[in-house]
Image (cartoon, rainbow over all chains, first blue to last red; front, side, top):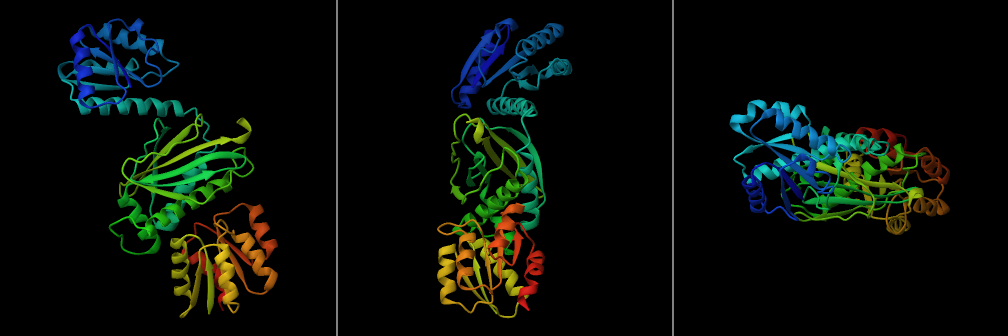
Length: 288
Length: 120
C-alpha cells in the first residue's frame, strides 16, 4: 500500500505514517509531498492520496481537483484529512472529486478503514465498465439457490475486483471451471451462516460446529449456483463445464487464482444481515 | 417401494430421502455416492422400483450409470436430478433412457410432482 500525504506540514505526513505503521499495514510506503503536481501515479495501482484539508479552502479544492485530474486514468482514490473545525467546508472537497474524509486527530484503525473503503469504492467504480455478461448469471443463480433450497432471501451488495487471495469467511467452497471458458468460482462465508444454510436445506436445527455434512452442503450449494449460471451462459463465449466442488475451512485461508485472470467478488447479504461472498474468475479459452 | 438414490452429495441424498419419506409410506431407500457404487447397489437390488441419479459425480457420472442400467433393464424408471439444465443435456439424458428430469435447485413439492407418475 502506497500512501501519499499532500500537506505543507512534514509532521502531518509523519503522523499518518506512524498511524499506519501502528495499524501494521503490510507493504506500506508513505510519501509526503507539498505540491499536487508531484502526484502522478507514483504509487502504482495500490495507492491512495490524503489531502490535508487545512488553511485556504479554495487552495485545498484546487489541490483536490489537480490530483483527480492528473490521475483520472487510474482512478486514484483521494481522501480529505480534516479536523472537526474544518468539516464545514469538506463538502467542497468531495464535490471536487475526493471520495472520503479522514478526521484529525487520526485514529490508526479509522485511518485504515477509511483507506480500505476508499480503495474499494474506486474499484467498484472501475468495475462498472467490466463485462457483466458472465457475472449476472452467478448473481441470479445465487439468489435462486438460496431462496429455493434454504428459504433465504439474499441481496447483492458490492461488486469489485479481488486484490488479494485471502477470502472473506472461514469456510469456502471452490469449484474449477473448464471448457470454452475456464477459471473458478468460490463461495465464502462465516461458519455460522454455513451452519444455518445447511440446516435450512435439511429442515433441521443448526449445529454448532463445521462437520463433513456442513462442508458437503456448502459444496452442493456451490454446485447448484455454478450449474444454473452455466445453463444461462450456454451459447456464449463464457460457457463452461463444472467440476466436483471442494470445501476449505480455516481462519483467513487463501485461494490462489490463475495469474492474469481477473477475479470478481460479489458481496451478498441475507435477510438476517449475514454476509457472504461469491468470487468468480472466468476467461474465455480462446483469449488464452 | 424400493428406491435407489445416487448422488455424491450426502446433503442432496438426505433432501431427496426426506421428500421420499414424505411422499411414500415406509420406503426402502438405498443410497450410493457415485455411479460406480450406484451400479453395484443396483446389481444387488435389481428389484428397485425407481432410481434417482445425479449427473456430475466422481468415478462414474450419472449419464454413464444410466446407460449401464439401461443395458440390463429397460423398464425401471430412472429420474435424473441434476444441475445440468441445458436443453442439450436434457435431450441427451432422455435419449439415453431417463424417464424424467429434475433440475437443481428444486423444492420438495417440485420433486414430488415429478416423481408422482412413478410412485403409484
